[in-house]
Length: 253
Image (cartoon, rainbow, N blue to C red):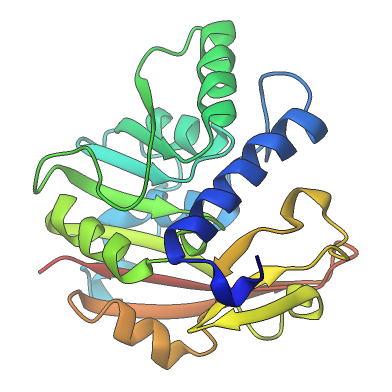
């Protein structure tokens, strides 16, 4: 069956199966994926308290150390956690943390890694997009690093993010841009869905379907329910693949 004949659900299931097989094949041990928290997320969480301040108020506090603030409260959700590195960092900042994954292998290894380290305040769940197993207005923060676009019905997922966030709660997600070297290895399927080809240098991504949003304008439309939506780009040539990530953040009214 070719890509044009596959339903959205079939493509989603194919990608989930690919993730499980890739983790089993390429990742050894219980700590899979990134080993350290994402720098953008570290900065974002550390400065959450300042986002509502104007520039004058912000810089009046410049003599104080905010980067190590640990007195947050509330709940945080990581969508597609892969590794528990980001969850552990956010938990250390004071949040009650939850993680969702489509990969059973990632959940099992994440739970094993937490057991090895004595981590008890992070809860991981296996997730079948698109409905989230949480009450309305439950989280203060929802985030996902290089993950949310693996959910092919992005509109449904963003609606769920809106539902589970508390009024005044923040989100932060990343998307690869048209400048990313990933673009050399994609096959266009239909309606914004692309597939990473068998020539992708990262074997973990070969054959996986993703949603590709080609412009900041499309991101703004996707998150139109939220207020104070901001988009910024982080690029790097420190690895063999040039990376270009668009981060989008906003607040539930």
